[in-house]
Amino acid sequence: MRIESGIDGLDEIMQGGLLSERVYLLSGPPGGGKTTFGVQFLAKGALQGDVGLYVTLLECPQNIINDMSNYSFNVIPLIKMKKLLFADLGPRMEYGYMDEMRDIAQSHEWIEGVSNEHVAPSPATVFKELMAYVTEYNVKRMVIDSMTAIRFATHDPALQEKEMNRFIRNLKKLGCTTILIGELTDPTAYTTEQFASHGVIFLHNFLYEKQMTRAIQIIKMRGTKHDCNMHKVQFTEHGLQVEDLLQ
Image (cartoon, rainbow, N blue to C red; front, side, top):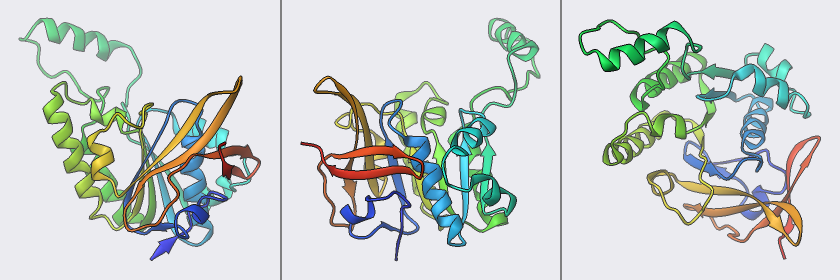
C-alpha cells in the first residue's frame, strides 16, 4: 500500500507515494529542509488518522515545535489530540558536575558509579524506547532525527556499520513508515544507511548561477518507478513544495 508523503509535488515523481511500513533515508546539508520534510510527513499522516512520532536525538523538541508552528501543519492541535508526538531521546543532562566527574573518571580508573545519562544513546537503547512508543501509541509514521547521534555512539568504524545495519533491520519490523534523517552532504559518499534503507531522498542546498538553490532528488526507491533528476524545492506557508526539473 502507498501512502501520501505530504510533500506537495513529491508523490507525482515516485509513483503516487511511499510504500508503507518501510524505512527511508532523508539526507542533505544544513538548510535543505530535512526537519520541515519530517514534520510535514508526520502531519499529513496525523490528519488522516495515523499517529506520528518525531524522535529527536540532537535538538530540543520545543524548538522544533516552535519552528514548525510557523507552517500550516496544525502542529499544536495535532499534539493536543495525541496524533503527533515528540520524543527527546538525546543526552539527558546539561553540562556541569557530571561532565566533570566523567573527565575525572576517564583519567582515574578507580572512580566508579559515574552516570552515563549525558552520553549519546546507543542504537540498541534507542530502539527499545522506539518500540515502547510504537506499541503504546500505535504509531504508524515515525521520523528519527538524526542518525549521526547514534552512529558515533562507538568509535570503532566496523562496529558502527554493523550497528547501523542492525538498527535499520530491526526498525523494519516495527510496522511503521519510518524516515531516518541523515547529515550526509555528498550523495555519492555511500553509507550503510543508504544500502539498508528501502529508499534514499536527498535534499540539496547549493550555489547555482550565483543564487542559493534548493532541490530534491530521489536517489533510490525500491519497488517504485521514480524520477531521479533534481527538482527545485520551495519553502511555502504550507511547507516544502516540489517544482519543475532543475535546468
